[in-house]
Image 1 (cartoon, one colour):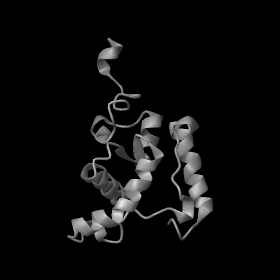
Image 2 (tube, one colour):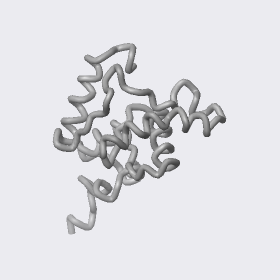
Image 3 (cartoon, helix red, strand yellow):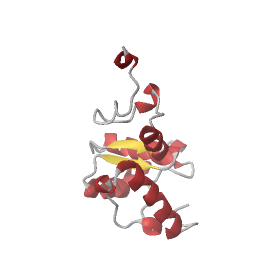
Image 4 (tube, one colour):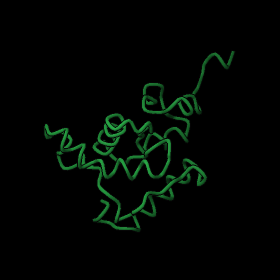
Length: 135
């Protein structure tokens, strides 16, 4: 999608992300949009059985994420999520990896307890319904 649909789709996604997290919490990567780097997990590489090679290729994306200084890396698909999460753990990046849909659901107040696994402590209870609060 990054190369197929180009910058207009990237701009639309950035609009959604900024609306969900707030513009003050948004950090873009460089390069970005249709020139952004691939995470290295797609196209079957994640399941290929070559984790060392996958991580070596993904080190470019890891370094790109680290340069932003962000606490979270938002990913659009399952392969990106699994790869970026693995890169953060493997290279000890310390950032959280979260699906875009997770943040959209969180912002709407409809994210369930089991869907908060990849959120940091700063977000785990955001808009969380606690039955004991009604008592």
